[in-house]
Length: 596
Image (cartoon, rainbow, N blue to C red; front, side, top):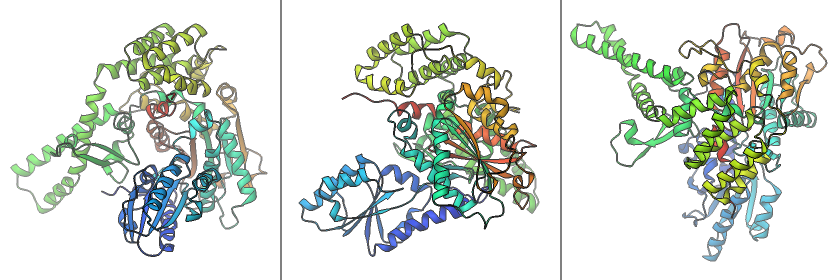
């Protein structure tokens, strides 16, 4: 099964988007005639695997290598670097070139920056006296379709860069990516933004439209009706909770990377000692599409039922005489056997993690913290984790959750936990604590927390959640409804006016604007009210809302959005744009930094 996701059922023409991206890369390679060695920075390699098949690159005389400090192993005279604009990657390029020069090798070097060149990177090449040897260009990769309703802008560190380092370059990239979408699908008439970064992106997007307008005369109706921009900072509670959907848990424990997980062959029933295999996970796999967004408890039951039904069919086959058409049906069912086996193996492997007392204890504690009723119990639990030296990232996840829901910790407790963390994990983690404080994720309490008000007003805790037949998005965390998705739900159902007071209690400003030809129209209270003709795209499809998460989105949130899309009476299809797919672990990890 191909690594590249099938996009035929996407609500927007993502296939043409992907083909355009492929074409741009092929053109770069075509213009460099003859055999060449393409050296890709490994992180970028992952993104490219969702866009273009390696075989296609090889057809254009390409030898593939990953960028590293080691000398280039190739006979090619032409060396093409495809790298993100990051300073640390420039050092590798310099060491490669210096190594060639010292051996007297004469090669032609090309450096293509993704998605655009930066002065700082070129300065490094100049300082190292190799800039004059390079032909420099850009490969404008801003958008990678991960699935039929998910686009990634592949900006790993957007959250930390804007929160801790004060680096807003990722915001320009996000606006550029959305503007690129507008060139394909028309100017998005309604924009709602919540959070510092989101409001800035909305602003940059308007500047881009003024400087380089999308000519919407050709398009009668824009294909995307509304853009909702949300800062991760607005809701850091959700990613710190453990996801309980099938895809969410796969990411928590096995780490889904560019639409696949890598694990020991033995887990998948392949007897090869020490071999790792990649298991693709996208909607091309029919069974995965059916179960990915369900609560894991339910997935186990469904797989059991399917296996039992198949066994029954098999027994019938062997004990009774069958007509040809019955045989044909049976063989058709057998075709789904590899998918069944794959997910039974994965689910069995996940169960070894989810049944552990430590995991169940952690879930229990997350719910207690989110309920925000028992401060002392939570404080003691975290203190004990630190003393037991449990993995630092696990401690940080709960600590961040605890700090946010309490709007910080009283000074005495704040100082005490910081001191204990440094004693347990080493003083080099001063930098980690500093990063968390800068981002406002771990802080001293300065005012009373408004979490209880927000929780009640938006009904974030839902008792008696039926995970098998959910009637609310809270099923994705078995009882907690993700705050971010509640905001989307309100935006789509009745606009943000009715919850204006609650929005003010959450971090950052919010804005609502109309753009393009619709800038002068009056009503913007509800999306439905935004004149009926915009709502239905010409051929009767539901119109689209693009929800963009700046700083990352979790699989559980994507599942909750899919659940909303599937509801009866829902007027919109929701698609997701994100800087990156994240979970509590990968998010907390970006803040971990050791001094020295």
